[in-house]
Each structure stands twice: as C-alpha cells, then as structure tokens.
Length: 93
Image (cartoon, rainbow, N blue to C red; front, side):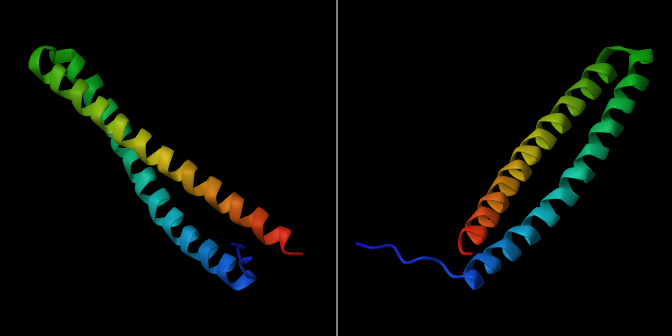
C-alpha cells in the first residue's frame, strides 16, 4: 500500500480547524485561570474564619486548579498538532 501525500489545501484546512479549536480552548482556559485566582482569593478570605469555610474554599481552589491544568494539557496538545501541521506544510515545498 502506498500512502498518498496530503495536499496543501488539506493541511491548511486542518490548520484552520485546529486554530479555531485552540482559540476556543484558550479562551476557556483563561476563564478558568480567573476562576482559580478567585478561588484562591476566597480561600485567603476564609483563612480568617477557618473551619468548614476554609476546607470548602481549599477544595474549590484545588478543583479549579485541576480543571485548569487539564485544559492547559489540551492547549499544549493542540499547539503540538499545529506545529506538526506547519512542518508537514513546509515539507511540501
């Protein structure tokens, strides 16, 4: 079997699709970073009262951080895919 080389149009279409995904995901990631910051602030405020409020605020901050980290991993994966497509496009020349 022989693999047919992808054309420039196919590569550019994939780049466009990935760029749109990356844009949306990056926007959501930045929104989540704001949520992490807000959760951190809420935790700092709860440190004065301690007890259950502090424990809940700590859990909320950790949850926000984990979600943001998952998005960051997805953003990095899309960036690697875009880079690979760029290399594939350059190889056409």
